[in-house]
Image (cartoon, rainbow over all chains, first blue to last red; front, side, top):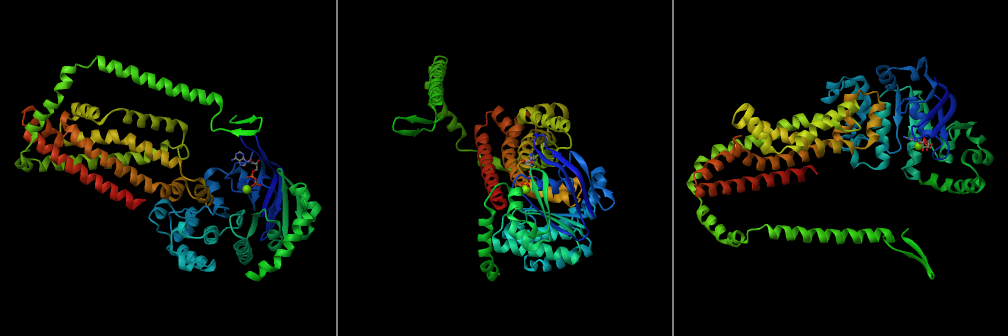
Amino acid sequence: MLRIEQLVKRYPTGDTALRGVSLSVAEGQVVALIGPSGAGKSTLIRCVNRLVEPTSGKIWLRDTEITALHPRQLRRIRRRIGMIFQEYALVERLSVMENVLSGRLGYVNFWQSWFRRFPQTDIDQAFTLLDRVGLSDFIDKRADELSGGQRQRVGIARALIQSPDLLLVDEPTASLDPKTSRQIMRLITELARERGLAVIINIHDVPLAQMFVQRIVGLRAGEIVYDGPPDGLTPDRLSEIYGAEDWGASQATTAEQEPSLTAQE
Amino acid sequence: MPVRIANNGKIWQRYDTTTRLRLWGGWLGGTVITLICWQLIANRTRWEFAADAPRQLAIFLQRVFPPDWSYINQLWQPLWDTLTIATLGTLLAVIIALPLSFLAARNTTPHPVIRYLTLLIIVVSRSVNSLIWALIIVAITGPGVLAGIIAIALRSIGFIGKLAFESVEETSREPVEAITATGASRLQVLSYSILPQVMPSFAGISIFRWDINIREATVIGLVGAGGIGLNLNATVNLLRWDQAGMIFVVIFGLVLISEAISARVRQAII
Ligand SMILES: Nc1ncnc2c1ncn2[C@@H]1O[C@H](COP(=O)(O)OP(=O)(O)O)[C@@H](O)[C@H]1O
Ligand SMILES: [Mg+2]
């Protein structure tokens, strides 16, 4: 459903973040994008909804060539692409409900959104989603009163109320503690399965990715160096993605920690 | 480099040697200039007049005190005019300046050319004092409250516009990206991600300017732009210092009240 061909991104500063990336994601498929910091993960998913303009290359969402769209058409296609951010990117001074409803902005006109007159169906959907992510008691709270995990749940509800076909998720757990991280990963992958969404999740926590995702893409210095199942990520492969490191040792320690962490939940 | 290698290890100092010498030179130069200026001022002062100052002050105070308390009955209308000038002037400025601030801020301007035009408007407005604006407007519209309102507004547009666009530029980018990613239009992005971030500072800036404008509105009457300044001008021309004294008392009260209100409101916002 998503097809990326020979995507190149060179920033005005001269950094080449992507060097000809090609990637396809099938309907309903969840892909984890791993790689060291600076590999180009954020740039890649930002090119998909053109928060970052690609330098060259093509991106198709189903039959639409995203890279060829005019601003108005681009806004229409963005409604079908939900995005979840590392730092949640909520509007701090708006309520939880307003933050969730802001996911519907592409579907209502300016005055409807200015006076907060969203269609009842949107509001019903917001209630349902807030209930689903476990925030029904926080509807009137301001976003800046929530904890990190709660904020990310609002972020998830905001992305899902768009009724997207594709979800772009940028390091959703990087600011969260290990237990909350897994809850958030579980929530995202469960919701994606329920709704049959295709998802790209940027994540630097390899064990967490392996736990929840069936396909892993490894990015290094703007190039794809791995694309396969989680258990194909041998220490050698990981060194190739992340550079020389004693992967055997670090995996052994995570393996030891696993049971105790799971028990806590 | 602030770190030096000495024979017994590394030495760290806040400034390196050249910076220290420059700071020294700066202080020395500043002191010399201050002394020279002092000398110039002393040479050009007529010391007989300066020595006379306490006596003049005593005479002035005798003329002003006691104020003519009954004069207050003629001051209610000018007082109301002053308040009107300050409030409507500020309101007009707010209505114009806040939208301008989005055109002037780097992160929201539709085009660099528009940005520079807006900055020009802001600079022109700021570089002319309210009293001068009042002179100009009175020459155009004739004297009165309307001239005062326009003069206050013209001066305040730059003040509010500048502080407001700076706070727009300080907003965080993440919510803007998030709202953009939902497929919202430019105006929706502004109203949902930038406006909530800058609302408190917009309100604070406006009320702060209102507080300043109360004081300015008491003065612009001197050039005929309405308000209590008109009365001040008239009483001084008639040498009715006791009435002028009453006006001082009233202005003092007005300023105290506006200070209190603006402080209270700003506290409530933050
Ligand atoms: N806005 C930007 N301007 C200039 N260079 C950037 C910008 N964003 C990212 N880069 C550069 O692009 C490269 C990839 O960054 P990024 O996509 O953020 O990687 P990741 O998300 O994998 O950490 C880095 O070298 C980074 O310095
Ligand atoms: Mg990143």
